[in-house]
Length: 568
Image (cartoon, rainbow, N blue to C red):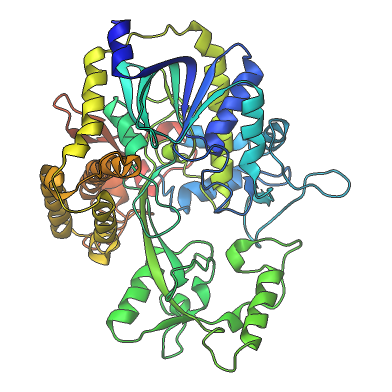
């Protein structure tokens, strides 16, 4: 059998396989070695190792629970008000997760992370704005590099420019993975005792910097991993109309052509995130002919009301205000001082279910970082917690893996499964369509981000989307083609197929939750319905391979914070 496998592709064997070379993957690898030096570690990275992931390139700092911050007050806000919470939290997980809110910072530093300190050597941290219940620390821009260097020094093996596609399973356990090299097209079979999914979420919006494919997430689901809170992520960001560049934290100074403040007109209250009230208000203004909408920089405060130089998404940062004043001084008109703005939808999902130690519902499979953020249901996301989520979940999972991996037996590979996965990848070279795969990806991105399919979605519009997804899956091989020998477009063919599959699951859960709650928004059920939908939606792979959507009771009898309807 070993000879047959070697004929199919190049075989690697390791103790721990980590899929994803961003921050979460590197912290996991570094910490495992710190705790268990004998464990052999391999990382798969589709890009160039040490320079991938959005944790620092798209972020500004790391969230931390400072000694003076109150854990209970913060967690209460996450349950009752945070749009990732709204009583869908796993409160046991959340409290345990937040307890690490200060100690994990020095733990990351010991592993290679560079975090800002004051001249006296103490940690430099601040509040981003008055009223925020958690603190932030500043990072080195190349924060990932320190961990990546440590991982290489520790002797881990890295396969970069390698595209992961599927998990290998046997008797309900994950026993490895398959992948291919983007440049040479060499097919890889990796046997492993433990596998870690550290490959980010599925972010549908192909236009912006946050796009990430569904390949890793769907592979975990296909291997038997349960999904939870699939429906909990629809965000809108404010961007410049002409370039699409984000201007975070400016939504409260947006005006229509009549000079009316949109934030005030529609009774918005969330200064940090763009809420559904603002989104619907802005869309209504444009539909009624009151556009264009513009951001008035002159309405920003001239000085910070808080100590330090907190970012606050641009609201109270002194340097941001000074820069906006300088920009206005360059022009006699309002083109630069009052730029036209629009809303950019970001449809995503982060639903791989994992416990506090990062264990998924499949034996020998762990999940860390954004891929599990909604699946863990802790709901404690605030701005700046991308890095924090990656770091905290990685540290906990690493401790679990390091203590267990020596006792896990290397599983046998199912030869027929390997053949099936390889054929599914490379059969794309036989596709007969006339479009490159990215055309499908961009089309689907635009389709699901349209208001009628996102913020105003209804049963009828979702039926239309589901029907289109089914039709596209059926005819994908007749729609796209992959240039012979092109590894990049071969990966995009995988991504287009997985995008269809994952979007179908998302829209099935959208339909199941007949209410608007947090980041789940519908146009036909515009209010929250605690009586009927204060419960989790979970998705399992059925015996026929099709998604099975069901509801799970939330055990409020064990939780501190309960919705009013629970007592009734």
